[in-house]
Image 1 (cartoon, rainbow, N blue to C red):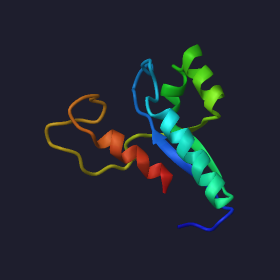
Image 2: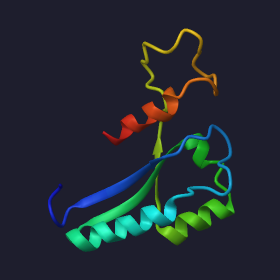
Image 3: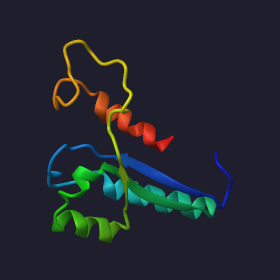
Image 4: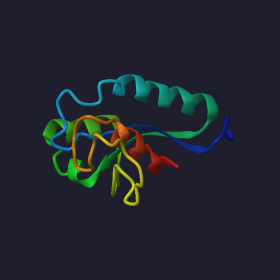
Length: 113
């Protein structure tokens, strides 16, 4: 319940650790229509934004870039998926290991705060 006429964003956290797959952003139609509905109802600006590691952004290909342009998606580069001073992770997992723990996909969202 933010103020009417404010500026808001629907955020999507993308973490691929390699080339993003295609199709990409499978729910973008729903996100865009919801952003437009919120904007209309509240007189606000509502962006659709995708938060990504710079290394993932570098792998975006023409179809990804066309989708970004078509939907007016804001790409926000973030420097890490795991906080640099992370003090805990499961004993059976090590930083840099791609599979086995969902901490990266959850902790990248800290950038939203």
